[in-house]
Length: 121
Image (cartoon, rainbow, N blue to C red; front, side, top):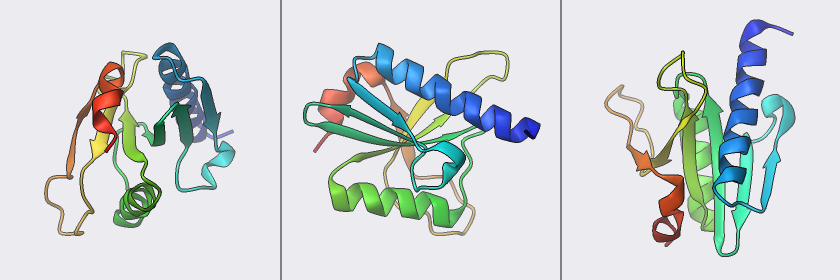
């Protein structure tokens, strides 16, 4: 397995671990990144769609696909990334809009897992 594939899998597993520790009763991984979201996490009344990336970067198509699916389904779209390569934990970012592809700042805000109840509209 390529090193980047292993790193991607490790990030997905770390995201699942952190979500489970935050009280999610059902956390599932889409193995091989075949779907729009790498990880889906559920709590009563809360559904997170998570794209776990080593550096947090997604193509415009990946970003907009995740964002539009989450909006259609009433889910919270998240990007999980490792802010510091020396740390194991990931930081979660809520996607707040679609990317326009012009290379500007990504429309996202920091998302704290223990504040998830206030993030679901």
